[in-house]
Image 1 (cartoon, rainbow, N blue to C red):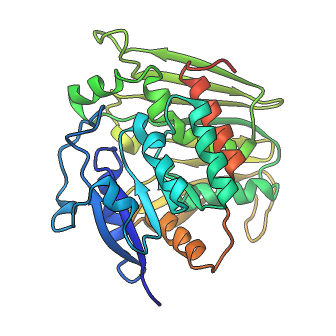
Image 2 (cartoon, rainbow, N blue to C red):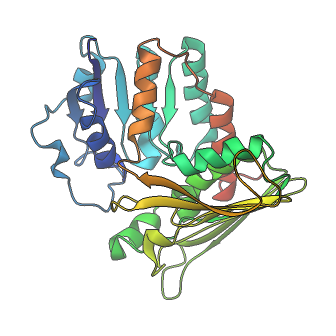
Image 3 (tube, rainbow, N blue to C red):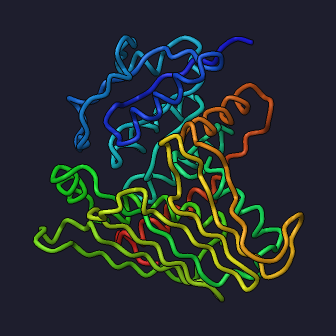
Length: 337
């Protein structure tokens, strides 16, 4: 089967190099036609050093990318607040899109992009990094099957301790701080699990001895009729990303995952506690082993390829993506809920 022509617009998003590395792992599916290097033009450059993953790839201008013969999908990896602006011309061309997160600081601008994709039936894939996580997807499936009863509590964090002072300065450029930049991943997941909350309570703080605009210690509370989701992120967690945790509790059990993901060659494991027997599992605690994770992003690009090839329908949930970003902006104090 002929390979899908893909290009990457931007190298400055925090996930940019990881996305390109994932695409390179699928050489039988994708033909990488080039990348737009925006390191000199980005208004908000990231805090990471350039990656060697781009070595040897053709460099394109934006105009060359938009007019590349037979181009089928673009992966947009510009800075967070430039993503929607950069993606709009791709939508107008009718090309399939993978756009990283979050979707900028303007809800109307994102709605315009989504409305255009919907009208043209363009596959539009947001780059929230937990959408391909096997453990988190199992939780969604089992919750919908009623295994742990009615959900009353979700507690999760996106803490880390990377990037040093450069990262603190970077986060200081966003009004919503880590609620906008990292808790957005958790909001995307909880919205899939629970739908729209009744209320969004944002708490944005800076750690000691940091400028007040460095909102690097954040809590988002999502209130539901019978449940509360507490989502946190701080950039001074000594446990680093290995301390990231997700616990979903219901009236008949819970799921607990820590770390949320790992790529050190060790298996990803999750605790499942059941009050009643479910499926092949007896009541009580079970350790679920998902094996080593090879890559965070590959599942999304594999799915996108199936959509582009017509092997599955366009499954873009434009309304859900809009809702997620509305919650993200409320969590970041950009808009009231």
